[in-house]
Structure formats: C-alpha cells, structure tokens
Image (cartoon, rainbow, N blue to C red; front, top):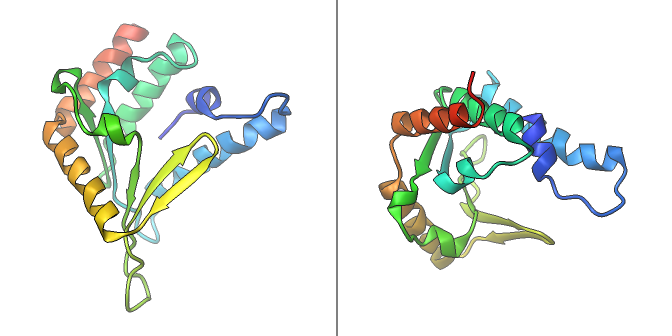
Length: 170
C-alpha cells in the first residue's frame, strides 16, 4: 500500500547499489498492490493495523509522506481492504514486543486441504516463517488484542486524512 516515493524511501538497499538495483524492490512493492484491485480471481481480504506513530514519522519528506497518507485513505475505501490505526493513547501493547508481522491465511482454491496459516516476519537479513500451532496462536492473540485497541475503519481513515493535511495543507 505504498506510493513510489514512500517505497523508494523505505526499501533497503546495499551500499553502492546501482539505480536498477534500488528500483527493483520498489517496483515489486508497487506491483503487489495490483492484487487488491484485480477482478479475477477475487482479490484477497487485506487487513492492516498501523501504529499511529508510523503515520507521524515523516518518510521521504513532507510531500511524499502526505501523498502516502492520501494513498492509504484511498486504498482503505476498497471493499476488501481494512486499515485500522492503533492510537498512541492505546499505550503499551504486545505488538511492540512482536514487531511487524503478517498473518497469512490461504484459500482452499482447487485443493482439498488449504495450506496451513503462517506468521511471516521480515528482518534486515531475511525472513522468518512460523507455522507451529503454538506460535500461530500467540500471534493470533496479539492480533486480537491490537484489533480490540484500534480505532474503527472510519475513525482510522479520518485520522490518516487529518495527519496528511497537517503535514501538507492544501
């Protein structure tokens, strides 16, 4: 759900990388968004929880950040997308311990048995896939707690728009 400017500012790259090497992960992030707008097969359900602090942290300059926030507000209107903000007022939460994570559930598709759910975590040097039932249950509990503390979708959208307008009025 990133704009080109935001993705370019956040994509990691090694020192001395060529322009093409820097552009490759940006393009990959932008292409992944096509999944949310495809007609067939049906787009996946995409639920996002963002800490309010992420919205306040200026990335790529004020104009790039304002554009990113406008983009988030627009994408949040897609019927298969839910973006909710965990406000600063929520205080300490287990999400601070877990860091960013993705819960992946896979549709049945043409198989008799769907692939099992997985927790995915990216890091500086690689990625971690957690699929043991106890690991999955722990992350599902954290997710449920975060959802319980988050603003609803409309309140979240209003906050995203407000922060964007404060960053770059007009």
